[in-house]
Image 1 (cartoon, rainbow, N blue to C red):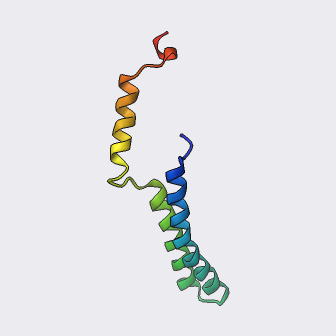
Image 2 (image 1 turned 30 degrees about the vertical axis):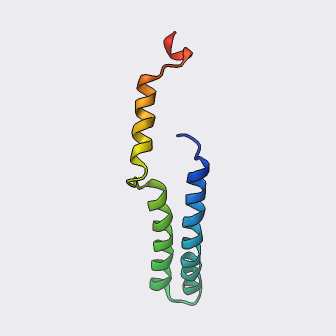
Image 3 (image 1 turned 135 degrees about the vertical axis):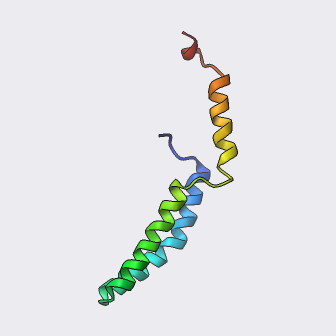
Length: 81
């Protein structure tokens, strides 16, 4: 697995900006004794981050195709030996 680039890092930060308040609300509800509501909010926050990280969006497809094509076409000196 490759290291995330700057764009992926910024996208993750943006997702966390939206997911953290939802998760914190869930924790607050859990501590207040509302376990079903709190667990739902924590689950939604976790799902937001997981979907952003693992879901392939239409914007990801061209980069993925280009990377696979480039890997097949371009040979590095180590590949030729």
